[in-house]
Length: 159
Image (cartoon, rainbow, N blue to C red; front, side, top):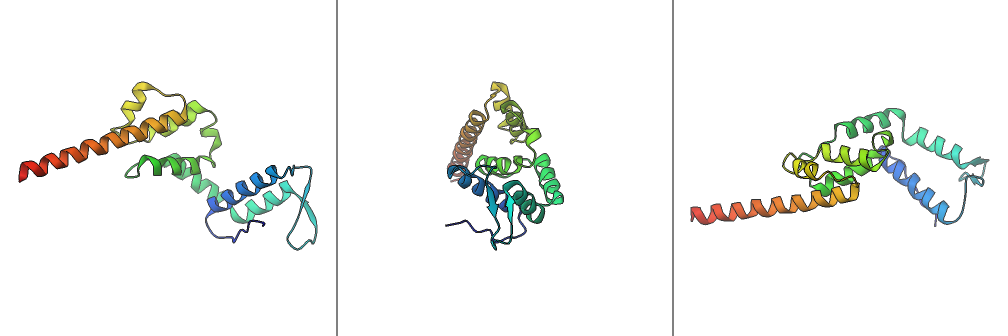
C-alpha cells in the first residue's frame, strides 16, 4: 500500500514523508538507478528529480530558512527534556552543518538546556549525544522530585 501525502503547509511533514518513502524504497532494494513513475504514468523520472520537484513544492527555501532560524534560536524554555529533544532532532535536519558529528550535536543540545541542568551536564562533558540526552532526562526527573518534596514540606509547614 503506497503511502499518501496530502500536501499541506508544514514543511517538516513533507520531509518526514520523504524520509519514510526513502526508507521503504531502500527496504525494497530500489536504488537511485531505478526510476519512479509518476502517479498518472505520463512520464518516467529519476528519484532525484522526483525529490527535487517534491521539495520545491512542499519545502521551499524560505521555509527551510525559517526552520533553520528556529533551530538556531531553539531553547528548552518550559519544554520538558523529551519535548526539547524531539524538537531539536526534528529541526536539526534542516541544519546538518551545525550538528555534523556527535560532539557538535551534543554541544548544541547542551547549550540550550535549562540553566539548572546545563552546568551539571557541562561539568561531566558528555561527547555522545544519546548519553547527554539520557543524563538531561535524569536530571530533569531529579529536579521534579526535589520540587515536589519542597511543595510537600511547604504544605505540611502551613498546616
